[in-house]
Length: 114
Length: 115
Image (cartoon, rainbow over all chains, first blue to last red; front, top):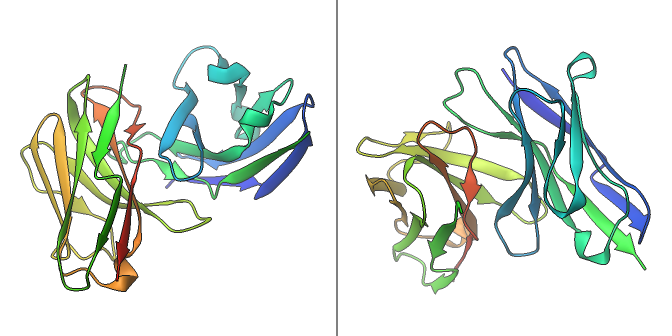
């Protein structure tokens, strides 16, 4: 079975500050890991993903995440927050015999203060 | 690339009527499509997995006779909410996965309001 835990349902940062959104996963098979962003009343947009290979993955809009197997983590970071980064962020895991299903975390709402 | 559309984006209907939502992959072929439901301030709840040319697989607790899914082609899946009731009001989101791929690409969602 697979599961995802996102620590913190709401994170608030100042514009220009570091963004850190935490994600820990549980998986009995090598995981595929994803971060998606959702703006109000919209679908989900893929930010980045880890499947195999390099553990530090870079995504769109300046975001990156590092797969740490020993810590079962896939935290999302961005060096400098912009007002436009305010949104809901979802971490998800898939893999193994789940039929490609994504298991989502609860989501983290990011607020950016001017 | 990897664009998924949904139609309609908004629908308001009377209780007891049926509503059909379309999900299309515009620039790739999707062997598998997924349907999700999202309540306000919550994560996505998977309703069913749809494979082209075969019956959908529903998650536990999802009524297959109420939420009819058809995946007739590699670029189109439809979700029909039959005899809709106010408790079916929600945000419905589809996703599509290219053949052989591991990434799901999401549509913009459909907001359903049943009066």
